[in-house]
Image (spheres, rainbow, N blue to C red):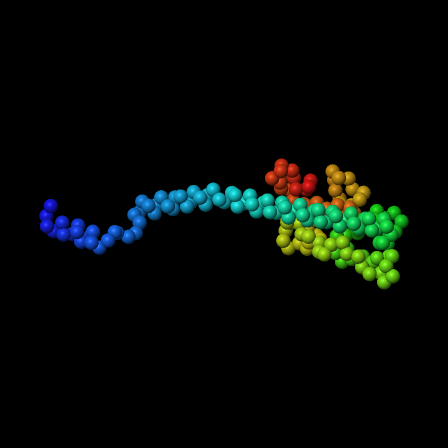
Amino acid sequence: MSKTSAAASAARRASGPQRGFTLMELVVTLALLGLLAMLAAPLSELAVQRAREQELRVALREIRSALDQYKAAAEQGLIERRVGDSGYPPDLDSLAKGVRNQKSPGHEPMFFLRRVPRDPFAAPQLPAASSWGLRSYVSPPQAPAAGVDVFDVYTESTAIGLNGLAYREW
């Protein structure tokens, strides 16, 4: 070994370890990060779908409970009914806007919902009450149709849920 190469080697050792990564280390790191991102994307999409499905379940339960409470109040005579009425509300907005209590001396309004929940699968520009498909009391379950009252609600989404059922059948 020559004196100059020995001196250069000693100078490198004296200056401390070299800092930085090699090109190969950077390529392997980026490949691993890309693989992890590729694996995480479907999981995040699944989490978003699960959250929307949970929101749909809660909204359907809340509206259907309010419809049942309205019907019970109508049968008790708390809400004005005409002959031939089913006892269900004429629209979803009346559940949140309130109806007059016929048995109260001041006819204070009765509220069944604080607000009408939105269908999480509907277009965002639609008002909450218009985002749902409506089924009247006289329409069959296989072919729900709107009518003079609101017996039930359903989502108008044609997508299939994680449980294999169409959202419209929930």
